[in-house]
Amino acid sequence: MPLEIERKFLVTSNAWRREATKSVEMAQAYLNDLATLDAGAMNVSVRVRIQGEEAFLNMKSRELGTTRQEFDYPIPVDDARALLKLAVGGKIEKVRHYVEHGGRTFEVDEFLGDNAGLVVAELELDDAAAAYERPDWLGEEVTDEARYYNLALASRPYSTW
Amino acid sequence: MPLEIERKFLVTSNAWRREATKSVEMAQAYLNDLATLDAGAMNVSVRVRIQGEEAFLNMKSRELGTTRQEFDYPIPVDDARALLKLAVGGKIEKVRHYVEHGGRTFEVDEFLGDNAGLVVAELELDDAAAAYERPDWLGEEVTDEARYYNLALASRPYSTW
Image 1 (tube, chains in turn purple, brown):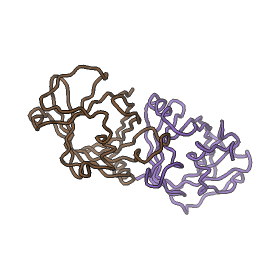
Image 2 (cartoon, one colour):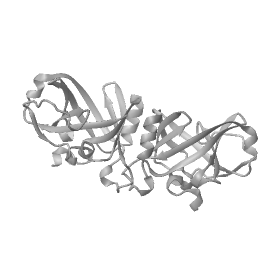
Image 3 (cartoon, helix red, strand yellow):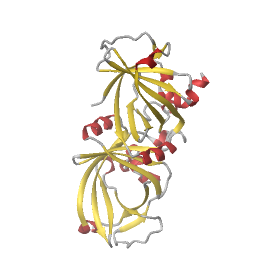
Image 4 (tube, one colour):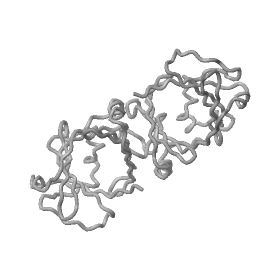
């Protein structure tokens, strides 16, 4: 069952744009604000995302770091709109660029709105130690820095850092 | 789109059993414990239910009373098992009996485990004022009593009342 190994990096230049093959606009928000929850009140984040004409409900277990359980289900867009109204914290808007490099796909998230100026690259791997080719534009790894979590950005956006 | 009008009643006898047409075993738990949450930390309950060979993820908005937004999605049973391990509070086990009366279907939940002894009947209606025929076995309405919420029963089961 869905174990996700995801490493997250800053980017050091715009050079990734040359390798982008596809870009998708996303709007998402969280139904819970884990930051205000006592340990034990909830072990997963619950996210609603509208992505073009599709919508998804996503849950991730609460552990920090690279290995988290993830569950993702398509839902009707109308449901997603209603659920976004029940969200807490702010809405996150971003463009996700799919960037091919060294046989792997980096997802480069270019944030908008309150998080404008922030760009991070994510790489999904089968296991935490898997090798990958480092593009020139890849910067510092921030996988374990909680403030870069989308969940954290919803309540404490980049513009307030 | 999911507006649910649901009225909940105690039962005064076992006479509903004669009118039961189907019975299904259910095990469910909640991914969040709204009782411990500050207002604003989360506006919906998130429930995982395994029901025979099927499983569902359900979300209900937080308003008390008869009118709550409800969202229900089928999910793989394996996902449901993994999500139940991420649940907070206790697991609720019950047998749901579908009971036909006066052209309507009452759902009579006979609780097991820590809630054994509790039996409630639920009736879903198109609007809160809709007429319905009252069976002899139908007792006091408890729609607005929060302790009868399944969510409340997960953390404070009937055996502790």
